[in-house]
Length: 334
Image (cartoon, rainbow, N blue to C red):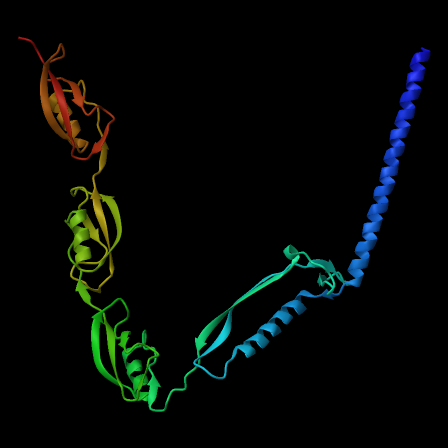
C-alpha cells in the first residue's frame, strides 16, 4: 500500500511538470502572436494604400500617353498597343471605411522576383490614313442593298455601272450579291462597276402522291425544293407510298420551298382464332377481320372432315391488314 501511494505522488509531480511546460509554451505562443500582430498593424498603418479604381485609371492614363508617343510623324505606318496584359501581385487590405485597397511597397523594399507584378504588351503596325485625291473615290459596299438603291448611290459618287449580271440566289430578288471592284477599293471618278443581282427562280410543285418515298424525295431535290417533314398515316395504299403532300401539285413556288409528305403505313389487325370452325365459318371470320385466307392444307384427324385444326399466324398475333392466314383442315382416313 505505501508503495502505491509513493508511485501516485511521483505520477502527480510528473503531470504537474508537464503541465507547467505546456503553460510556458502557451504563454510564449501568445507573446509571439501579439508581437506579429503588432508588426502587422504597423505595416498596415505605415504603408501607402491605393484604391482599385485609382489603379485602373493610372493604367488607362499610361496607355493613352504611350499611344501618343507611338504616333510617328514620318513614314508609312504608325503603331498602336495591340495587347496589354497585367499580372498584378499586391497585398490587399481595408481602409478606415472598410473599403478594399491595395498596399504599395516602399522603394527600399526588397521584393522576391516571384512576388513582382508583370506587365506585357505588344505593338501592332498599321498604315497611316491616306488622303483620297479629289479625282479618286472609294467604292462603297453595295452587298445586300436593293439594286435601285445601289444604282442611286453609285450615281451620287460619280461612278458608272458597266454590267449587271443576274444569278440565282436565296437572297431576295434584285438584291446585290456581288460587285467588282471589291468594296472600299480606290478608283478614279467615273470608273465602271460590275454588279451581280439576285434572281429568284420559281418552280412548279410536282405531283408526289402515289410515288414511293425514295422517288418522291429525289423528285423534290431535283427541282431544288426542300424535303420537309415526313410522317406516316394508316392507309390502304402500299407501304411507304406518298398519300398526301403539303403543297398541291402544279402550284408555283420559290426554289427552296419545303414540301411535307405523308407516307402510307398498313393497318395492324389481330389474328382471330378459327380452330374448331368449319372451313366456311373460318373463311368468313378471317375475311371480316380484314385478312385473307391463305394456303389450305389437309391433314388426317379424328375431327369432322373440313374442320380447322390449325392456323398460321397463331391467334392473337398482330399483322398487317390483308395478310394471309394459312389453315390446316381435317380429313378422314378412307
